[in-house]
Image (tube, rainbow, N blue to C red; front, side):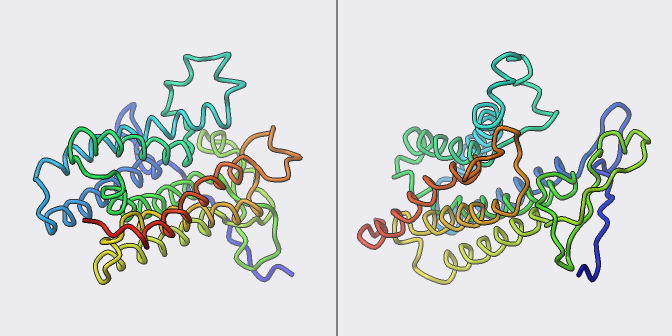
Length: 274
């Protein structure tokens, strides 16, 4: 029996400035980068790394996150459409980002950063960056919540949410059409990622985890994608082609990241950083 249902009717738009609008998703995205910058800057200053590393690292990561996440959505979830409408790929403001693509983009950027700037093993940067990544993942899923998107299957749990399914039409004045009471999977993921942020940051500050090459990154990546894999079981599919699949695209893409993350944890026990 449903004891209570939360009716989620939040407008995704925070406010407008003439022809431009500020949406919660974009605001949270920006906040995640600002907080991530602050955290990484504090880490690098404590470790007495060159001052210009933080600005260069920030540029590499921001560009890689946006480009990787967009291309991930295009190739993993929407290639059938975008292959016929390539001009639409650039319309990132209309939505369509994939976390797995963002992860691939970040790893690629760190390899380039390490080769051209730090001259250190890429895992040195990734072990520090993962703290900011887990926090960013929290904010991105909260942005999804504000957009009333990426929610779960119908449920009778007392914390079920009713989401507006015609959100774009509703913001233009139409009557809202609500989903059945559903799992707020955005919150499930957000809390998982926030817990990983606390864990990795605590481990960086209070333990010797950062001295073991790949340990923090392995913990963070394994945690993120294990959570993603299991939460997908109660989440609505993002694309029609996923219907009937034993594991959906999000789960299939998560498996390699979990395997690599587990390997890095194992490997770190034999590779103490210099």
